[in-house]
Image (cartoon, rainbow, N blue to C red; front, side):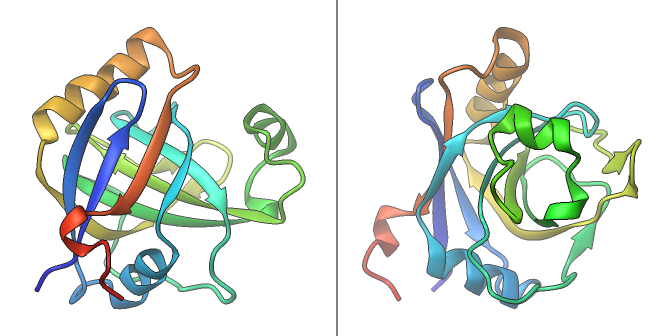
Length: 169
């Protein structure tokens, strides 16, 4: 049975369902699944184009490394980034309230086309595609675009096990 997550923009009341890609990214899927739920302030990417994300405290002891990586995510990709402390500049960490953390996990969804993971400060930033949105992408894309247009203040991005998997281990 496929493992499913519900991803929600809490204030906007919009959710989608994502299927974990256990065969393509087994280490990432297992790490995320074991650590669910996650929630935090939502941010819209400046460079990647059609991405919303939240950053959470690191929930892994050792780096997972690249698996099923991409620098050109497509609509519906759910992507994991592991940023050690030196990867994020001081101003960014202060802006996001992360200055006390040694590193963070960035959990992102991509809702539109023509994305590219290129950061002007550090170059290519590959991420692990560990899930794909299988239900609710059009409504989520509209809500994500509203985050870009109307702002993210007060909005949270929530990742949790889909109700059909709430007791699954």
